[in-house]
Length: 468
Image (cartoon, rainbow, N blue to C red; front, side, top):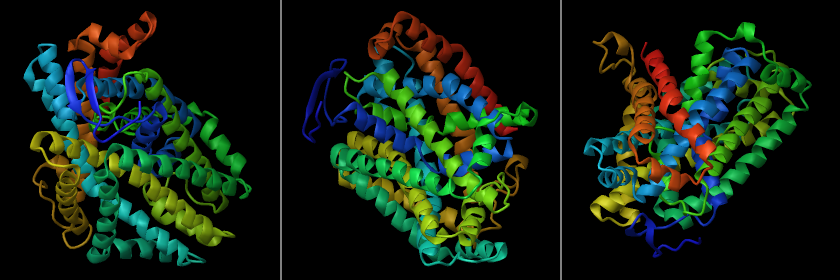
């Protein structure tokens, strides 16, 4: 089904008549949803948590968790969006009315939209770091530098609020320009360019990694299971990352699902997005670890792997300036596509609820998010000693940046995912679910029972583990 900004979808959403766009094809949805899922978590977090937890055994557990937790919840969220046909909040409001459920269930959408908004406020700051590093690498500032010098470049960036504000502003502007253009001209067109570009850059980086002489070592590290190195903590980290990497619990998949035509299989699309997201994470590992091993660096170096360890490595290698620059362009692409998806649910709600046009909705949502991001910027320097909730033991020492990260990752996202699993698995009309998914009887039972029994327990385990 092709999209037109004035297209009217009559009866496509169980009897409702709405004026809204659709993805032009299944591929368009897959690219957009994969763009949302593929973010800094794939290229930044996955390689270092794999390094910290022993490599191949961790990857195997992670893949099992994607199948048991990630895919069932993604299908449920896309289903809610398509069945409701509106923003996450309004989709849930309509569904609760149709299925005669308690109206409080609509707050699942509110939690997701709020989580995405809060995440984008500090995610934009980190996206700004990546933008900054494109120029830093291209200008050769990492070439031949010591670890201390590379570390001082990063600490110098964090300590300069005006520089951070400039990059934060530029990143938010990039996100807002795309979202303001709508589904077809904005989201779909951007992801149709950025996602193939991201894959090409990633493959170039893997090709470069193969020249380091340590590619085989990286393959063994990633894919050869060593269960003696896998701890209970590592299993829980894999479970948590499987949940967060697919953009679950933040209403994104509900918003994107609301633009999904009825003739597209939710199950096939969700599995494809999950496979592509996991593929990017594994390719990122194959691109990063050979460079790390070639320079005798530590694969479990934590978040500093991207902004300190890798710049040091690129600075010591032939053509490192070029490939270091390409790597940070790749990082910007990943952050950009995720940022677009994080802003979309709020913009979609403002359009519906307040009757605003797309541009005004985007300006209001984006500007508000940009303002909140300033607090995260200041918490890295001028407000570094400000800990608003430091009187509570669990928040002791946490800056505003830390609090936003903790609140979203450890509370709002797992809570949102848990509520989605319970709502769809236990309360929504089973016949309506079967009609939306169009699965075989056996396939539907497998998905439904997993969502009812396995997924909620897994999310609860992650929830309490993170709080502890």
